[in-house]
Length: 82
Image 1 (tube, rainbow, N blue to C red):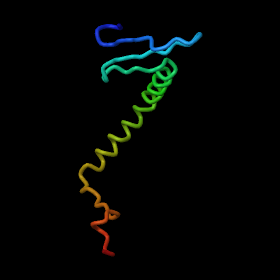
Image 2: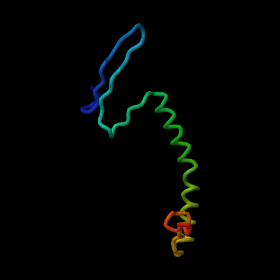
Image 3: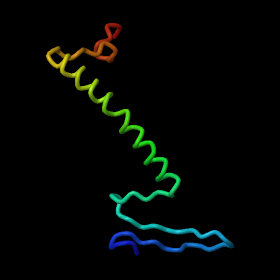
């Protein structure tokens, strides 16, 4: 057991390989180490690039908030061929 919520079970041992089963609540992320490290690296990259992109999105929203929504002319209900 890890804490009160995570249960680790040895499912199989074959030579130098061990298969583990992990039972955890869905709110607890469970990843192999290489997957975890890749996720962490991608999150760090996104955080570095995120601030300018977020600032630009806020700026565009403020500049266009007063305008009426654009009507979708590609929707089937606007197709005059029917």
